[in-house]
Length: 215
Image 1 (cartoon, rainbow, N blue to C red):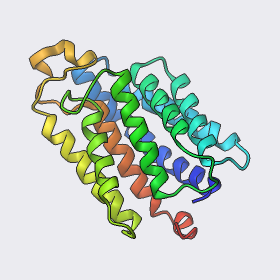
Image 2 (cartoon, helix red, strand yellow):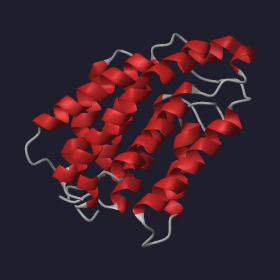
Image 3 (cartoon, rainbow, N blue to C red):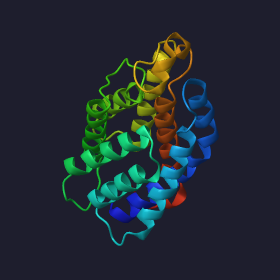
Image 4 (cartoon, one colour):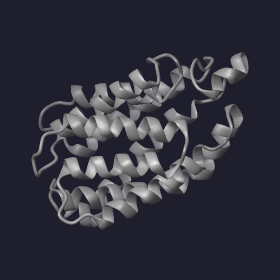
Protein backbone atom coordinates (compact mmCIF):
# COMPACT_ATOMS: atom_id res chain seq x y z
CA UNK A 1 0.00 0.00 0.00
CA UNK A 2 1.47 3.36 -0.99
CA UNK A 3 1.18 6.60 0.95
CA UNK A 4 -1.90 7.89 -0.86
CA UNK A 5 -3.78 4.63 -0.31
CA UNK A 6 -2.76 4.60 3.36
CA UNK A 7 -4.02 8.16 3.87
CA UNK A 8 -7.33 7.27 2.24
CA UNK A 9 -7.73 4.17 4.41
CA UNK A 10 -6.92 6.06 7.61
CA UNK A 11 -9.31 8.84 6.63
CA UNK A 12 -12.21 6.42 6.14
CA UNK A 13 -11.33 4.59 9.35
CA UNK A 14 -11.23 7.71 11.51
CA UNK A 15 -14.45 9.02 9.99
CA UNK A 16 -16.16 5.82 11.10
CA UNK A 17 -14.46 5.83 14.51
CA UNK A 18 -15.65 9.37 15.18
CA UNK A 19 -19.21 8.07 14.95
CA UNK A 20 -18.63 6.09 18.17
CA UNK A 21 -17.78 9.09 20.36
CA UNK A 22 -21.08 9.04 22.26
CA UNK A 23 -20.61 5.39 23.19
CA UNK A 24 -17.05 6.03 24.33
CA UNK A 25 -18.13 9.10 26.33
CA UNK A 26 -20.73 7.05 28.19
CA UNK A 27 -18.32 4.19 28.88
CA UNK A 28 -15.74 6.62 30.22
CA UNK A 29 -18.32 8.48 32.31
CA UNK A 30 -19.07 5.24 34.17
CA UNK A 31 -15.49 4.94 35.43
CA UNK A 32 -13.87 8.33 34.82
CA UNK A 33 -14.51 11.88 33.73
CA UNK A 34 -16.23 11.04 30.45
CA UNK A 35 -13.78 12.89 28.24
CA UNK A 36 -12.76 9.93 26.06
CA UNK A 37 -15.42 10.70 23.48
CA UNK A 38 -14.07 14.23 23.13
CA UNK A 39 -10.50 12.95 22.93
CA UNK A 40 -11.35 10.47 20.19
CA UNK A 41 -13.55 12.88 18.27
CA UNK A 42 -11.05 15.74 18.27
CA UNK A 43 -8.19 13.38 17.59
CA UNK A 44 -9.92 11.90 14.55
CA UNK A 45 -10.73 15.35 13.22
CA UNK A 46 -7.19 16.67 13.72
CA UNK A 47 -5.47 13.66 12.17
CA UNK A 48 -7.77 13.64 9.15
CA UNK A 49 -7.17 17.34 8.52
CA UNK A 50 -3.40 16.99 8.86
CA UNK A 51 -3.17 13.99 6.57
CA UNK A 52 -5.22 15.70 3.88
CA UNK A 53 -2.65 18.51 3.87
CA UNK A 54 0.28 16.18 3.15
CA UNK A 55 1.63 15.95 -0.38
CA UNK A 56 2.78 12.53 -1.58
CA UNK A 57 3.71 11.36 1.94
CA UNK A 58 5.63 8.23 2.83
CA UNK A 59 4.20 5.85 5.46
CA UNK A 60 6.59 7.11 8.13
CA UNK A 61 5.62 10.72 7.40
CA UNK A 62 1.97 9.75 7.71
CA UNK A 63 2.49 8.05 11.07
CA UNK A 64 4.52 10.94 12.49
CA UNK A 65 2.00 13.51 11.30
CA UNK A 66 -0.82 11.49 12.86
CA UNK A 67 1.13 11.23 16.11
CA UNK A 68 1.63 14.96 16.47
CA UNK A 69 -1.94 15.77 15.49
CA UNK A 70 -3.43 13.23 17.90
CA UNK A 71 -1.27 14.42 20.80
CA UNK A 72 -2.04 18.09 20.24
CA UNK A 73 -5.76 17.70 19.60
CA UNK A 74 -6.69 17.31 23.26
CA UNK A 75 -4.78 17.65 26.58
CA UNK A 76 -5.73 14.19 27.84
CA UNK A 77 -3.72 11.21 29.01
CA UNK A 78 -5.08 9.04 26.20
CA UNK A 79 -4.11 11.60 23.56
CA UNK A 80 -0.59 11.80 24.99
CA UNK A 81 -0.23 8.02 25.12
CA UNK A 82 -1.51 7.49 21.60
CA UNK A 83 0.58 10.33 20.22
CA UNK A 84 3.70 9.13 21.98
CA UNK A 85 3.07 5.57 20.90
CA UNK A 86 2.68 6.59 17.26
CA UNK A 87 5.87 8.64 17.40
CA UNK A 88 7.71 5.58 18.67
CA UNK A 89 6.09 3.54 15.94
CA UNK A 90 7.19 6.04 13.32
CA UNK A 91 10.77 5.78 14.51
CA UNK A 92 10.59 1.99 14.25
CA UNK A 93 9.44 2.13 10.61
CA UNK A 94 11.86 2.31 7.75
CA UNK A 95 11.78 4.86 4.97
CA UNK A 96 10.10 2.60 2.40
CA UNK A 97 7.39 4.10 0.20
CA UNK A 98 5.11 1.09 0.69
CA UNK A 99 3.34 -0.02 3.86
CA UNK A 100 3.15 -3.80 4.10
CA UNK A 101 1.85 -6.22 6.74
CA UNK A 102 5.32 -6.53 8.29
CA UNK A 103 5.37 -2.75 8.68
CA UNK A 104 1.99 -2.84 10.37
CA UNK A 105 3.36 -5.33 12.87
CA UNK A 106 6.46 -3.24 13.51
CA UNK A 107 4.31 -0.16 14.03
CA UNK A 108 1.73 -1.82 16.25
CA UNK A 109 4.29 -3.54 18.46
CA UNK A 110 6.25 -0.31 18.94
CA UNK A 111 3.06 1.60 19.82
CA UNK A 112 2.02 -1.01 22.39
CA UNK A 113 5.48 -1.18 23.95
CA UNK A 114 5.68 2.60 24.24
CA UNK A 115 2.23 2.86 25.83
CA UNK A 116 3.19 0.16 28.32
CA UNK A 117 6.38 1.99 29.25
CA UNK A 118 4.96 5.51 29.43
CA UNK A 119 1.77 4.39 31.13
CA UNK A 120 3.63 2.07 33.51
CA UNK A 121 1.06 -0.60 32.72
CA UNK A 122 0.90 -4.18 31.51
CA UNK A 123 -1.62 -6.66 30.20
CA UNK A 124 -4.03 -7.43 33.03
CA UNK A 125 -4.07 -3.88 34.43
CA UNK A 126 -7.34 -3.25 32.56
CA UNK A 127 -6.10 -0.67 30.08
CA UNK A 128 -5.96 -0.33 26.32
CA UNK A 129 -3.12 -2.85 26.36
CA UNK A 130 -5.55 -5.66 27.19
CA UNK A 131 -7.07 -5.21 23.74
CA UNK A 132 -4.01 -4.01 21.87
CA UNK A 133 -1.43 -6.64 22.82
CA UNK A 134 -3.61 -9.68 21.99
CA UNK A 135 -4.50 -8.11 18.65
CA UNK A 136 -0.84 -7.49 17.82
CA UNK A 137 -0.06 -11.07 18.82
CA UNK A 138 -2.79 -12.22 16.42
CA UNK A 139 -1.27 -10.11 13.67
CA UNK A 140 2.15 -11.62 14.30
CA UNK A 141 0.71 -15.14 14.30
CA UNK A 142 -1.19 -14.67 11.03
CA UNK A 143 -0.17 -17.13 8.30
CA UNK A 144 1.84 -15.80 5.38
CA UNK A 145 -0.53 -15.09 2.53
CA UNK A 146 -3.64 -14.93 4.70
CA UNK A 147 -6.21 -12.44 3.35
CA UNK A 148 -6.00 -9.03 4.99
CA UNK A 149 -9.61 -9.08 6.14
CA UNK A 150 -9.12 -12.50 7.73
CA UNK A 151 -6.13 -11.15 9.64
CA UNK A 152 -8.13 -8.12 10.75
CA UNK A 153 -10.96 -10.38 11.88
CA UNK A 154 -8.54 -12.38 14.01
CA UNK A 155 -7.15 -9.17 15.50
CA UNK A 156 -10.65 -7.93 16.32
CA UNK A 157 -11.60 -11.24 17.97
CA UNK A 158 -8.43 -11.13 20.07
CA UNK A 159 -9.02 -7.52 21.10
CA UNK A 160 -12.64 -8.19 22.03
CA UNK A 161 -11.51 -11.18 24.05
CA UNK A 162 -9.11 -8.98 25.97
CA UNK A 163 -11.87 -6.53 26.84
CA UNK A 164 -14.25 -9.29 27.90
CA UNK A 165 -11.59 -11.03 30.00
CA UNK A 166 -10.87 -7.89 32.02
CA UNK A 167 -14.36 -6.41 32.40
CA UNK A 168 -14.88 -8.10 35.76
CA UNK A 169 -11.53 -6.83 37.08
CA UNK A 170 -10.68 -3.60 38.85
CA UNK A 171 -8.82 -0.97 36.86
CA UNK A 172 -5.23 -0.67 38.02
CA UNK A 173 -4.22 2.47 36.12
CA UNK A 174 -5.69 5.85 35.26
CA UNK A 175 -8.66 7.69 36.69
CA UNK A 176 -10.75 4.51 36.72
CA UNK A 177 -8.36 3.02 39.27
CA UNK A 178 -9.53 5.64 41.76
CA UNK A 179 -12.89 3.87 41.90
CA UNK A 180 -11.34 0.67 43.21
CA UNK A 181 -13.87 -2.16 43.33
CA UNK A 182 -16.51 0.03 41.69
CA UNK A 183 -14.60 -0.14 38.40
CA UNK A 184 -15.21 -3.89 38.24
CA UNK A 185 -17.95 -4.89 35.85
CA UNK A 186 -17.34 -2.03 33.42
CA UNK A 187 -15.41 -2.61 30.17
CA UNK A 188 -12.31 -0.48 29.96
CA UNK A 189 -13.09 2.57 27.79
CA UNK A 190 -9.63 2.82 26.24
CA UNK A 191 -9.55 -0.85 25.32
CA UNK A 192 -13.06 -0.54 23.87
CA UNK A 193 -11.97 2.48 21.82
CA UNK A 194 -9.17 0.38 20.34
CA UNK A 195 -11.65 -2.37 19.42
CA UNK A 196 -13.84 0.24 17.73
CA UNK A 197 -10.79 1.46 15.80
CA UNK A 198 -10.10 -2.04 14.49
CA UNK A 199 -13.76 -2.52 13.60
CA UNK A 200 -13.75 0.79 11.73
CA UNK A 201 -10.57 -0.24 9.94
CA UNK A 202 -12.17 -3.50 8.79
CA UNK A 203 -15.21 -1.64 7.48
CA UNK A 204 -13.05 0.98 5.75
CA UNK A 205 -10.99 -1.79 4.17
CA UNK A 206 -14.03 -3.09 2.31
CA UNK A 207 -14.79 0.28 0.72
CA UNK A 208 -14.86 0.03 -3.10
CA UNK A 209 -12.02 2.52 -3.62
CA UNK A 210 -9.79 0.55 -1.26
CA UNK A 211 -10.56 -2.76 -2.97
CA UNK A 212 -9.65 -1.22 -6.31
CA UNK A 213 -6.07 -0.68 -5.14
CA UNK A 214 -5.54 -4.42 -4.90
CA UNK A 215 -4.27 -4.10 -1.34
